[in-house]
Length: 360
Image 1 (cartoon, rainbow, N blue to C red):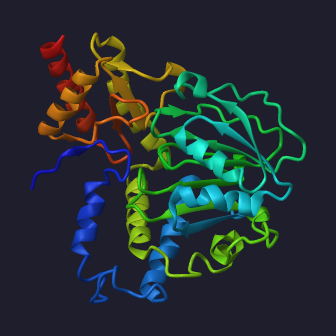
Image 2: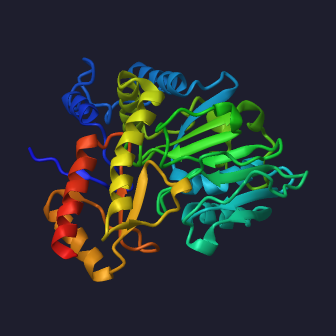
């Protein structure tokens, strides 16, 4: 069997150990005589899977008891609507626009109330995180919204915005479980799992209980009400059962690896290998200001579109997959999530050095 190094931004690399475990259990999960794909979501076996997954996530993130954990569907894109529908009591929300996904969330919110672009880094193609230490926040604000790690542009908040006592909502899809987090600083943390946690199809929402109410915007569909899902323990309808099962295995793998402190250390070491090379390279350069660099998504360019295309083609031939950058940035992007081994980053840098020698 030949495995490539998969640098895809999502769906993305999963721990081999998890994939092997899932493969071994595919036909017979723990003596049930069936796959998790086949079992009822109301069965005792699946109840144990989802309960254990939630508890392991709570352990990893130290989630307080006054927060609910919801395993939902629809990805981050559905949350762009669900958040204002459930939280826009005064119909006023601030959005800090640092990339495509924050922009999409901001545009969606405009359908439901007054969405204010509080700050933006669009002036420099989203290559930095703006200063959010003293923003002009209105008193009647419902929440401040951020995308904490920007998958496309490779930026990450190193310090959370000063919301001046207002609820912070964060999309953490591409930095989920990559480092320790103080859940109490947020009203809502959510993320699609397909980048750093599991397979596509699951979105995890961690929401403070006081934000879960019957008081939602008129016309909010039943399926888009947090209270419906919270009251039903994520089983209001058939959940993405197999995806939750894989997420649960990833949570156990993370615990085995030493938890989020250990993952942060591991991720910093991997990112340093790549960023150090980019900083000394005469051919390649990063596109993000140093203070805003993501540990998860690293965009880089040569400055020559033909050379970029050649690099993507030859890297693929060398077993380095999905390095083509997003169309809005161009060039290349290496997504080096939790499951990407250090050897994968070292192999990428070795290839980049060879390419540089041959093409300068």
